Length: 180
Image 1 (tube, rainbow, N blue to C red):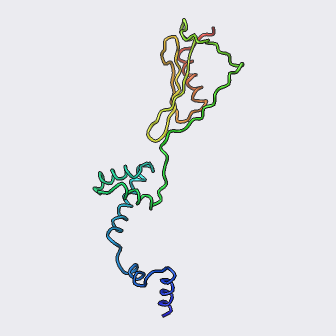
Image 2: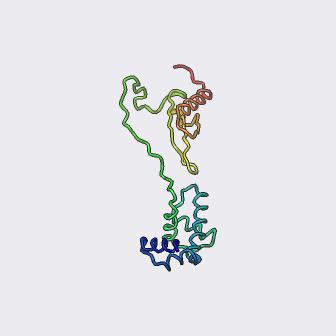
Image 3: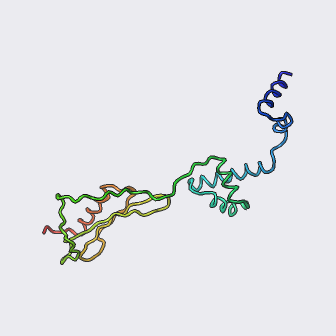
């Protein structure tokens, strides 16, 4: 009797009929609920396999292709939203550019003359990033302006001074330039 009284009070507080309360605990879940739970399991496995990078539209394609589940993008979106799956960014890294200040300590030796008369007089270098799978690698290249050919290059997962120094050392070992 005491249990029944607490249920009545609970139903009154929640503003729910007693019959609704008992239906919730005695009836099996609706077919749509069961189907949503199965789809959520598939969504979670797809989401983890893709390293948290697929959105609702691509998850829908994978569900249809791999599991044969015909589903709308909106329903996939709602299910993913109800699962509170964190989003992983897929944008490129942003590099902040600060305008270099002209320093008197490093004068311009080239003076816009990019056609040297002999090899190993003028070398140029550049660093570029290349997207590979889900990350970036950095490529450092050294060119001889006389022949316009690459004389050394290195690839690393991080852009550090050792990348540039190792590339320069490789170029020095290959060409062995003499002092001017």
